[in-house]
Image (cartoon, rainbow, N blue to C red; front, top):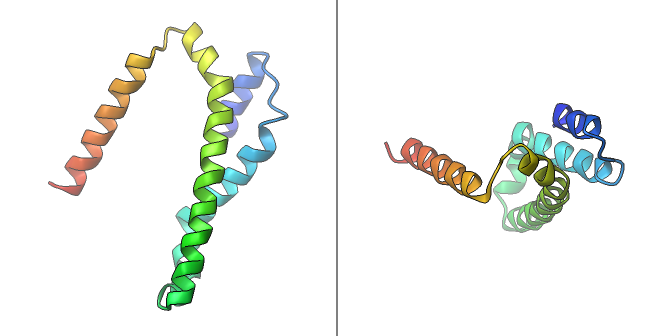
Length: 106
């Protein structure tokens, strides 16, 4: 993500307004990916712990959505200049979902 931000900056787009949110999103993503469940394994066994985790995960989802929206607002105009279309994005999403489904249901 850092490299992508640098490329956006090199294109002449200010990133100061999005940097703090993306930094938080990256920290949350890394924690969720690498440590979240192992750090909270005991809480996962109790109803109150699971409820707290659900609340925390829902808050993370909102942070990720906000970061995606802000980042898309910056990057999509650049991508469109290079020929990227909504159809290309839809096709990529279909392919990604198909790949994911094939791995889950071999």
